[in-house]
Length: 317
Image (tube, rainbow, N blue to C red; front, side):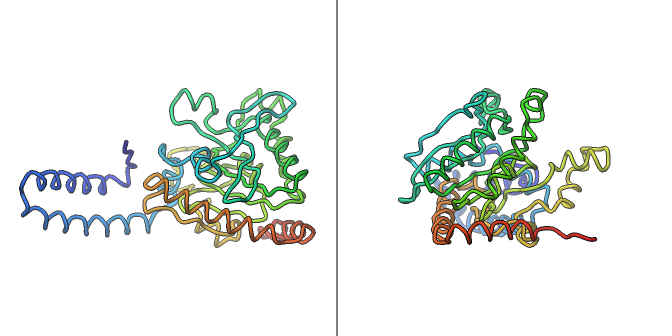
């Protein structure tokens, strides 16, 4: 199954021509091989130019790509022995949040992430990756368990934002997010947070307070969606591409601003073009950073974490 974005259409047409010519070549037209080779060189150059010069809005589209690997896809590679735990012990089990324990290359971790669906039925079950308060409280329950057993925490962030419905607000959505941020700031174990797709607002931050925060190359991380920003500033959601540029929500932007600590490379064109390669790249980053953070004494870890977030932003008095 292929799914091409609007800005990728010229590439799609070029690759279709190459496939058609290769089909003719197999039918006994060797003189076409030279033309195929020429077009493949053109296509490779076009791919490099296209993905090297992406706009903020084009990166938003890649981060939301329907074939992009989700949390459970990565967990399947990272920790094949993953055991999922359910429920917040207060209200219920939110399927938008995955939480459990697993072993990554011999390292026992607690893994927490947000999960979207591949089709309408699963998206309804997962609430499109937008957690309710019980999802964040489930995450916090597992984080406290990690602290109890002295295990590092890995979080995989992929959400358009916390669910804003009336029921979620009645059950304390804002308190649940604030509580997670407060407690993550002082958990006495290493925390590695990775934005793998969309990192939307407080819904993302509720599981993204880490000693190290990384982003996949084509992921996004922002205080608000481009559409929401455009609706507020200009009263027109169609101006979302302009908002995407202003929000500085891409991995290169956020690395330059010091909001994140590193970028995990993806295959050219996005993780959906090479899911196995993307997963291996993520696994290497997890192993490297968990080992590094685990070697830091707890008191130093907490001091550095506080310092990391205290120095973000610019303040004028």
